[in-house]
Length: 134
Image (cartoon, rainbow, N blue to C red; front, side):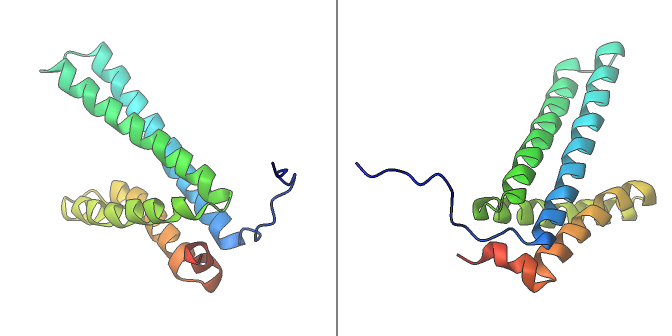
């Protein structure tokens, strides 16, 4: 049986990828806080359908936790996390555009700026694109 080496001989994680992971952490924390506050309002208020409202808050909480786990993996340089992070940011763009069309500029900025930043960090620089190279 071969011994497993104590240290892993891997490439260092580029600064652009670590910065993108930091932005994803902010998105995840923001989503968890937002959905926690929403769940609190549902529990204290009188919604038309409490089960539906709580399930929406639960899905948002789960998405926030997934974002935090993806950010952790991206920060460590795990290539498997790069594509889900990229997909998440690409899905956030139409949401932000919809918020702009609905005349909610501050909410749109809260969605579009982090998404654009992560896309720029991962795809806009050669260092960021290294996370996609095997």
